[in-house]
Length: 595
Image: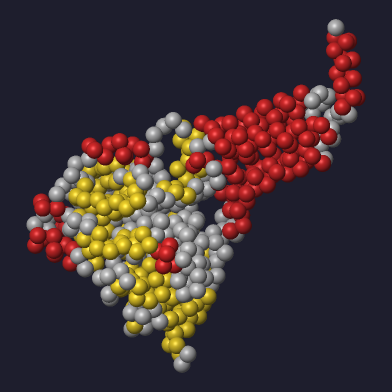
């Protein structure tokens, strides 16, 4: 019987022209697949193209495996056609069946590479099996590799391009929030004194994104640094809807934005208890496979009102006391464009009597200004097509200017009419999701990530108007979408995913240390401290010194991916992410505690 089976196998091999497979190409390509997926995370100061390898390298290596199979594997024409047709059909069926969040980046870096890797590994192991069965087994391995994606869903990617994954049957943070929302306490606006409320809204402690000057600098707090003896005290914790918004703060009121099922919501919370005061919802939902779900920008408090922009492009003015909508504008119509890849992300700037946002439309529909009282257009100006930063107001050489950083460079415009004061070209092939820093009124820092770095430019008046000249460009600070702070002649922030300190004088590195992922930093200027919220939700206290990286204390504040900017008011720390918000009482020095 054994002799008969051997004879039959040989006969099949001869009749179908089967030969042992050439295996060194798929072995090499599997090595390339692994290297392009993981090596970029080990390279410091690499160009932006290095990170593109992590996204597209495994996919391209997988396609090259198919090319090998068709042209260089020694497989018969029957095997070649069967293998290619089977892999393509299996890929299509799997992509139809996976959770919608697993399409896009997860398809490129996980589903297809795992299927192609399974196909290649099986063929390597069965290369000397002279039977079409080896192709059938390889197809089964490809299906098995891709089928793992059927069990998962994604909430977007982390800062290192790792996919955030959970089991498909587990409820998402949004689903848990919607289920628990009925249990969240509610505080009525009537419980606040009218006089106190008016005073708070007239002089908000933290009027919007990154504070009054949009530089993440906090004044007034004097903190103790021994958090072992005097740990921060959690005052409240509540579930919230997904968003990358931060808080605006006016007295006892916290304002933020969230996704609530099919609606984007602007929400007011009580700062003492975390209970909801009011919410205003509008039908809109934005999700992208990289950034995840929900609004991106932070509301702005001005003139007793709240100005908010959702990820789909709805710009609104609301009554800060009740949440009632005064007016709303659809930026998609005004800018004549669809939402950018990662959504409209510009936190509204209220300058004099206009509301300014970046929309990135063509021609003169890039930066848009609306009358703050009526919502009617006031001026519009050309701008870069891609920016996930926000306009900010600055004093430049004694004049007021709207400052905007885009993929094309730096723009300065008059707030009342949008007249161009400066267009400084510094093109970036990727995105800019950062805030420029005006230093001393005549110099501007232009942060850029993904291998480009940060540039300092000097501004000067001339007969032709305002000019900008490069002082230095440094790749020692590549903050990606993680804003830095400036203190006593140094920049403190994220060089990719490692915290660093860079000299303002020449861009040289003072130190680099502390792996906090893609987090955010807040400067507590009056006590020379840096409060860092890591990407995984740790709160870390650092000494703001150029001497060395000095970590003083830390504690776990939130669970899960945290990209939202923190806020400190007095001894209160407010933090949130896409799943929860919390308030902590920070230990202060006795002199401040007694006030």
